[in-house]
Image: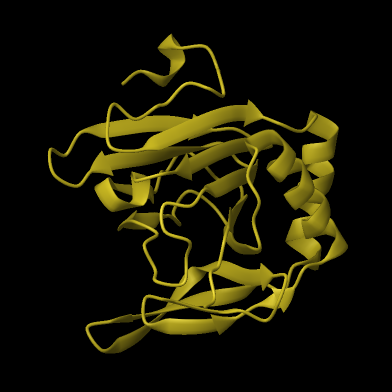
Length: 203
């Protein structure tokens, strides 16, 4: 699918079937996005990500942070993280994202990619702690990067660039039927910060 052949329309579903992905484009003015990028880079409690792969603990160059309305625990890649409480900056961004997406969120996983060499492999966000078929809002600041979806059965691929200050919303059965990734690239030499707002469910 050619991303540039279709004007940015938040109501447009970029997936041909089995899910809903809506790209809003930049939802913040350029100067606001620049301000948020610098503040997030300097103020967030970044730490290298960890994963258990074939019983071995892997430490990534990519850095992450986990924030929420409460000290929620969240387990992915067999590593459990405990959330830090929202900062005023994250609350401000969250409120803008909720207004644009028409959804509500109680947690946020942040990623810091230092350059195009750092990315994310194919995966889906299907952890048991997440609201099933709930919305996940992905906000990008910094370098524009390509984002990709791949259908789990027929392997259909959808690519789209995520711009500075932009919002992408994945919801409904997207995580059930589609994988997504941030492919590495040699063309990007500056950092990208990604915030993925989501909803944690506790019985």
